[in-house]
Image 1 (tube, rainbow, N blue to C red):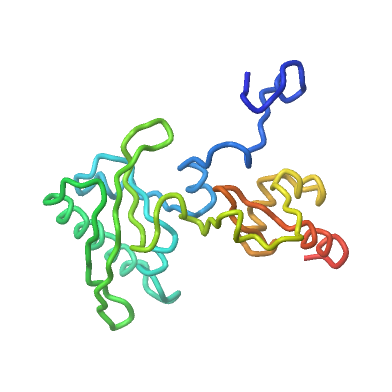
Image 2 (tube, rainbow, N blue to C red):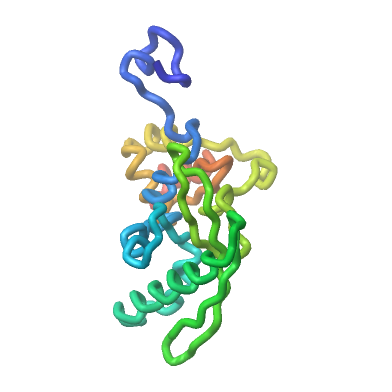
Length: 203
């Protein structure tokens, strides 16, 4: 029985829950593109925990669209090696490390933050991110107080019903910025007025 459903309801019978009312999971962040999983690369240099890099950190690793793929891969390897070297001398669950990366003829030194924390099942996982990020805010989460008043907010499920798309398709529209949305408590919320505009005028 799910904790979100009343006994005897269709939700309880079929095991259905509103994905936007459940806890934000690491796998959701990976699916939403907020985290990029690089566990296999990590294992190749001796990092045995699941490993991911935030989308914002990835943007700093690859700031130009025309960087060759070989350079992208080399920058990621250099970043992982710099992290591993720092981690070897750090017993704390959070650290800052710096790495010099080749970017279109420039070699800037960038600083990243790495944390080891509990994953979806309580297992240790490592996240590499920008220094200003933390796990709760990855993906641009904002507190409810930051949402303008007077704009009723809809869940992804509600938007899907209004637009007659699947929730997965709505999340894709949000990631592609075709539907304006904000993160609230780890879940996407969309202003009703924006959906009414889309219904009237289209995307």
